[in-house]
Length: 267
Image 1 (tube, rainbow, N blue to C red):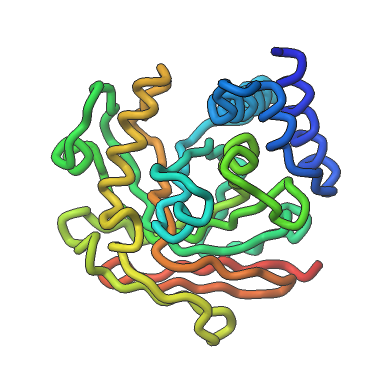
Image 2 (tube, rainbow, N blue to C red):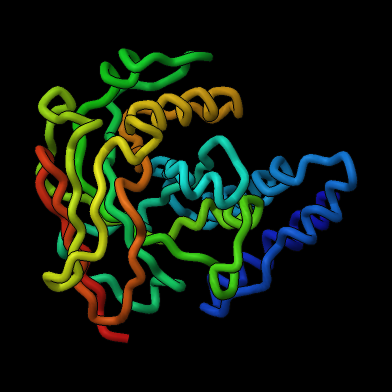
């Protein structure tokens, strides 16, 4: 079993290294899981193998991303909970910093709220108050999701195995205290060179981004890898994602939080 999971992790690793997407992994995971098996747990095992490999190659883990926070996307994939992936320092770009096109894979952009922690989250069950107390500040963010699966032909286990389709992320540069922001009602507009490509609000993220963050904190404790001070949490999309092309400049404005820009180099 472990050799088979290692082989799937290697497929995804090579897809990233070569820039050539691979076929979906869901049939392989279903076959390994068997009739009564848990393919989702195996998908997370594949993700964990890739995370460990990144760490062994000197990568620095800086937080986690939450995916599938949209009810519509959950219904599309037949799930009732989010998923998560790992964030590494070499995935982070500053506001307006040019992103080399070769660093992306089938990229799409989505606007999010990033929470930056100043305390560890180690309880078995967290409350909104725990998350509020543990958050040093929030930033506007653009997640550049990417898929190692060809043509974005994904189901739940495909994206989970593929580190929740994590690619890159861009953080704004003006921190805001959590109390100054209405996380639920804050409106979001994302534009590409001035053309509107996505609109939404905090409520699009599981009804409240804090709900997504609590889910993540509880999940990571259960898995033995609790969130720590300094970690970045990308809480989930505030609106639909938008496809990205070489040379695009994507800007997202979030009410009460300011704006952030992802600038992509020409191919």
